[in-house]
Image (cartoon, rainbow, N blue to C red):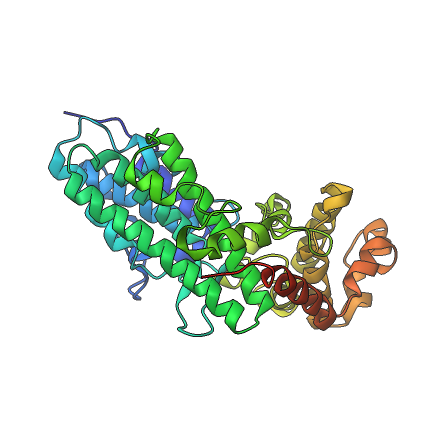
Length: 382
């Protein structure tokens, strides 16, 4: 029996090439993360595309999603891997194979194609927004298995709750180290991850008495004692305005930067956790793969993006990125302005944006760190 699929494999691979072209060199034999290696294999062997089984197509979609979700233009297969490809009439062996892949995916290298992660100051373990993408496919596996294979569904459930406990511990580690910047990065990442998990549980219409829902649903909301409180603290730190924006305000989709296609040229240009963009901007300002004209193009995108946001929510990240660019661009601000339209050059030299760019990085990060630690100390964790 044929089960419906989404985008054709060759078109999906074309989308991957469009957004992260550096990941699919057709003559590459270098080792890579599992998801990148799978895409490279299929890119090298287009004759395999028509013969892909349902499981193999699911694996392709998961790999494409993991490879591009931290890029400027992610592939649009979210709904496929979270819901549609888990067709209720699939034979059990096919669903079990898909679920096995989901279990394996939790061990994949989440840093190979993402810069949006933090490492525990105690254990060095990685906490990434891509763990939220894993939550979403794991919840799909659980939804598909809970009646057909309760034992395997319980294995998936245990992995989900164990990952939630791990993320809670990483947040505790940052709090113990009094690392406010790391605490904020962990908090916004956890809030994103739990949001992904909640959305897919809703998509599968898990009943209020369902065991996974009872353990995990809305675990990051206020006054929730599950997991000892760190997940609730993550939600608070993500939403609370700090200076003056919140981490939730800052960690949007950065649509303004999609227009600068030169940013898709290298993994060096992948965005870190916002608003801490000084180092990213410094990389842009001096990178050998970018011409002065392209650096100016990125500068314009940052300026336009800053202006388009609501006045009370103007991102702090874009001025930080601009300050970073100025610090490393050969000739500094004066020479950079030579590549900009006159009006943009004027706005970069003076006015509200110049004021924001002129805040010293040390002062900027200390303010955010101190505000985060002050809020965190009000929350008792067990």
